[in-house]
Image (cartoon, rainbow, N blue to C red; front, top):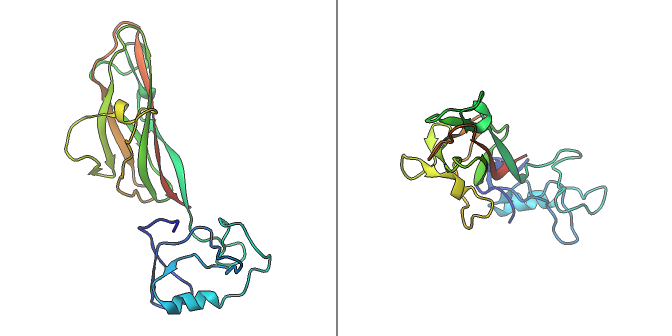
Amino acid sequence: MAGYPRVIGYVAGAGRHHVRGYVAGPYDGDDYHPGFGVGQAEHAVEHAIMQQRSPNPHGRSAPWRGMVAPGVHPVQEGHVPLPMNPETFNGTWGLNAGQAPAGTTILFSARPQKPFKMARLIVRGTKVGASAVGNLIGELFVGTDLQQGELGFIDLESIGAATAFDTWLSFKQAEPGVWIRCQATLTAFPTGTDFEVYTISALGHYLH
C-alpha cells in the first residue's frame, strides 16, 4: 500500500470511524471509485460507503489521479529534495573577503512549507588549494530536537556523499514552518587564498 503511514485521516461520510494512512492513486481493477483511496478503511462499513460512490464520469483514470470530488485530489506523498541554505558566508570557509574564518560554524537551514520527513542527506564540497583538506562535520536538528544518538559533531561529508552506501536516515517529521538545521564546521581550515565551499540538500517524504 502506497502512502504515508503516520497520517491519520477520515473518509467523508464515514462518521467517527478513523482511517489510517491513504492510498495514492486509487484504482481497483476494472471498477474505479472516485475518492476511494483517501484512506484505508478499518471497518467494513467504511468500505461499503466508498463502494457506493458514483463511478467516475470520465471513465478509467491514471493510478495516481484519484479524486475525492471533481477537481479535488486526496493528500498524496512525494519524494522530493529540500535545499538547506547557508545562513552566512554562502557556505564558504577561507580567509578571503566574505568567507568564514578558521573556527567559524555555519548554519545550514530549511523550513518546509508542508509536512516533510527527511530520509537522506546530500553534501557536496568544493575544495580549492593545497591547504583545503578539512572535512565537513556538524550536528543535525529538526526544530529543537537533535537527530543523533548523542551530542557531538558527526562526519557530514561521509554520510552525505553521493556515493555513500546505506546512509538512509529516518528523521522526525517536520511540520510546516519547523526549521531543519545543520550546524557545520571543518576539521581543518584552509589558509592563504585557499577555500572550501559546501552545499547541503535533504531528500525526504513530502505530503502535497
